[in-house]
Each structure stands twice: as structure tokens, then as C-alpha cells.
Image 1 (cartoon, helix red, strand yellow):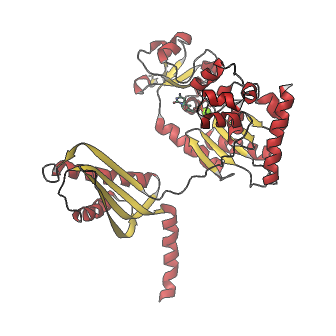
Image 2 (cartoon, rainbow, N blue to C red):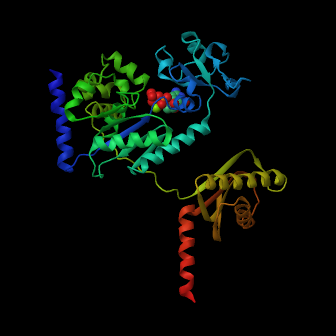
Image 3 (cartoon, protein in one colour):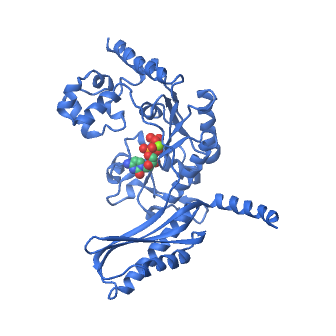
Length: 404
Ligand code: DCP
Ligand code: MG
């Protein structure tokens, strides 16, 4: 009975979307499969098919043996209070889950292989898969190390073909599999990307909603955590279908107004949030609040060190994101919370720590230092992406003959 109701409600929503916009949105959510663990299996292929968990630090790194093989640590050898970041699907079959204590996991799967976390490596693969997707569908919202939303609406291609091309591109660039959910909005696509993991592809049509979405636990909704789910359970609400039948007034009585309204809408599959494509950064800055307010003269050595270190950090931030900037600013907050800023614009863009430090020093000389300093900050703005600067340089060189 309620399934019929579901069809009416959801199809009404889709009709509404279609009235505003002749072609409904096509939003994809892509999530990598067992991400950290899968990246590790690329370098330890002998572990494929085995229960493997990723947790802890370097002391559990595999040890190379004289015969060329590797010795891996087992969960049973672990002592400590670490938690599991992720586990292969074989380990999950034994009940091991993300965020579980390693000691508890060891009781469930003592023979599972333990590998330490290697963030730089996961970040590298994260960049690779995102670049691969961007080569096919550039409207990307970056929501985590292993997940993105993609707006496919403006692309001419068929949805299934696009999704298959994206999955293939990710596999070619990384050797890894991902799962994709596609629907008219982010909420439903996020739920869908999880439905057929690993290596899944789910394209949701309005007609699929009653069978695929409504029977799911409310916790499958991104934004309904364990606490809200527990509270809903006390009201007899466990599934999304049950949530969609709840009166708005009942939800208002038990949750804040805005959360209740949000629950009411998401239970009907309503979500108008756009895919927010990463904006270009406007500036890079670093600041530090000192543990105690520092005296401009007495604490001069310490202040100078901190100042130089801030400049170095900003320079590293610029370099790691491949940007250069032309305007250097400093910010000082004094013990009375009064804040002053000063700018200095360079003739050329830079990401060089020494150049930034010198310009920031020029700014500092223009600030009367009569009170103790609470906070110090350095900012670089008037940015230009390095590749654009190169293009600009080439353009200028081409212009030279015309100036003669
Ligand atoms: N992660 C973590 N701590 C958690 C959950 C996850 O450090 N509590 C890390 C490890 C995961 C990565 O983030 O590999 C991505 O998280 P996911 O929830 O997407 O989990 P997986 O990609 O590992 O598995 P799935 O195939 O279910 O997406
Ligand atoms: Mg994942």
C-alpha cells in the first residue's frame, strides 16, 4: 500500500524537477572500493583474496626476507589501542569494520594481515583517480579522499556509457575499482553508490525508488547518524519508508525544526543541493596564536623564528598546489585584540620562502610595535596558477618582436 504512495510522492517530485528544467539532473556519486586497502594490494599483490586490515603506524610494516619474500604482521600480534581505518571485503566478511578497535578486530580475525597507514600514498592515488574522472566529466565536487560527486547533466553522452567510461578511466589510471551511483540528486546518488559495492554501478530511475531506497535503514541517509537513528527507532521508525510516513509535526516534536524539515524532505528523496565545483583559491595564509602574548623586543628571537616559519609554510602550501602569488600580507593581533594588517606587492609572482619572508619583513617594519603580540599571520594573494604563469610567459615572449 505505502509503496503506491511512494511512487506518487516520488514521481511528483520528479515531475516538478522536469517542469523547472526539461532535462532532470544527472548526478553521480563515485566512491572507491576499500580504498586504503586496495591501494596497499597494488604493491602487495600476494595479499589479494586474503583478509587484510589497515591500521596503525610503521612498526607493522612488512619485513623483507633474505629469500626475497615479505613477512607480514598478523592482527593477533597487535597490542595497543589503535583503530581500523579500513579492511578488505574478505576481512569484512569476518565482521571487521572501519573504526573498530584493532584488539577487538583481532579477536574476530586473528590471522588477518595488518598493514600500517600510508597517507601520502593514498593521497597520490586520490589525485590520480580524480584527474582520470575530470578528463571525462570535469564538473566535480571533491568530498573526500576517496569520493566525489560528478554533475553529468550537461554532457551529451548516454548515462550508462558515461559511467562505464569513468569506471574504466579510474581503473586505467590507478588499477583500482570504484562504485558509482547515479540519480537526479546527491542524496540518492550517495545511497546508490553503496548498493552494489564493490565495482558497482547503480543508475536509479524514479520507478526503482520504492524497491531500492524505501526498504533501507534510515542510517543509509548521509546525515542520519547513530544518535538520530536511535531516536527514530524509539518512534518506531527504522526504514526510509517508515520515515516518509512520519508526520512532520511528530518529527518537529522530537528533533529541531530545521533537522525535522530536512528529515521530512530527504525521506521523499528531495535534495536540491548543487554539485559545487572547487573554486580557485584566492589566497594562501598561515597564522599562529602564541601560547602567551609575546613582547616585541624581549621575545624578538622567538618572534622572528615564528615569522620565518609561517613564511616557509605558506611557500610550501603554494608550491604543493602549484600556485604563485604577488601580494604578501601580514596580520598582527595585539594583547588588547586590536588587529592590524599590512600589504606589500612584488613586481613578480613568487612561491619562494625567502622572497615572501623579505616582503613580509617590509610589511612588519610599517607596524608600530608598542604592545605584546598575541597572533601573527602571513598571507600570499594575487595568485596565479603556475601553469597559467607559464602560458603568460610564453605569450609575453611572443609579443617581444612586435615591440621592436
Ligand atoms: N577511513 C578511515 N576511518 C574510517 C572510515 C574510513 O580512516 N572510520 C578511510 C579508510 C578508507 C577511506 O577512508 O579506505 C574511505 O572510506 P570509505 O568509507 O569509502 O571506505 P572504503 O573505501 O575503505 O570502503 P568502501 O568500499 O565501503 O567504500
Ligand atoms: Mg570507499
